[in-house]
Image (cartoon, rainbow, N blue to C red):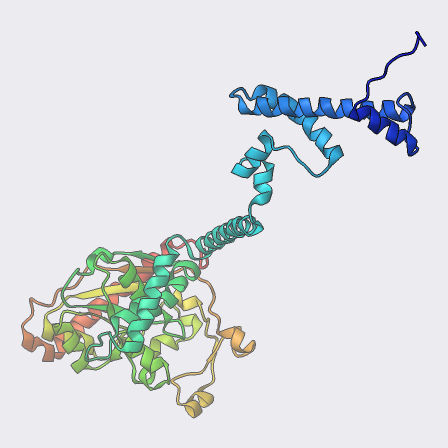
Length: 412
């Protein structure tokens, strides 16, 4: 009895005995140690979490960043709890990968579309500059303004039907490539053409079609310092042709008669006349560069009455564009034409035969012949008119011979 131990009676012991009595494990069993280990682990985990929470409250962020991976790993195993670190804060601010993922995809597509639009726009602008040349935007704006004025009728036409705006914008634009690129016209002596006031330009005529008159008009318009408009005197047939007659009027041409010529000269216009007429245009190729008769000198009478100078003009190169080797006179009479030409290419090749040969042209203006020294009544004197007409004709013929001797080739 002396060796007996006294076991105090408390609630825990009673609970142990009660549990043992209901089949619970005894204190010394393995299950009891496992629960103890789990309890210890939970206690350590609680202490770790408390330490981390205390460290997060401090101003020093280094311990927090060092403890985040361990905490994150542990919490990943335990459940959906996720630690918030520096990377997440950067992503929330939009500076890291998370921020990039948070941006809407439409913004990225908008930047890509803008870049593609810039590339396409730059390419289109470069292509337009290459095709139309620099400053094509201004040219397009001028073209639209021109169309608007034509539709609204906001343009001027003189008493002869001359439309300066249409001539500059359309007709000269069509003729200029022929002048510069196809016939490669070389012009000399434009200093003899007056800068202002009336003057009469007299030139030789050739080439089957009156292209020489049109090229002379371009030469004066584009290369004269005053950019003057040359008003051409044309035959009746020109104004009887559909569309051709309207365009001739719009470009400043008028009927070759004394009344119209004198009225233009008195208004200070620059007038061009080709006295050979159809005799010069329709002469055979074997008679090339041999001037035909200048008529009765009506152009001299007009110059004498108005007192304007006469400027001789020689054109070399037009004789070879349509070498006329024959003439269908019967067919010409049936069609009401002065001649029906036969060339090496027309009518054998059909419409292709209407393409002129690309000869090289030379246009030279001579020194003006003054008429203001003559009295006005000499315009009715046949001898004075004949002498001046012959002087003009001989001047043009000698100039043609000189240019032909200086010419190296028909085409180059």
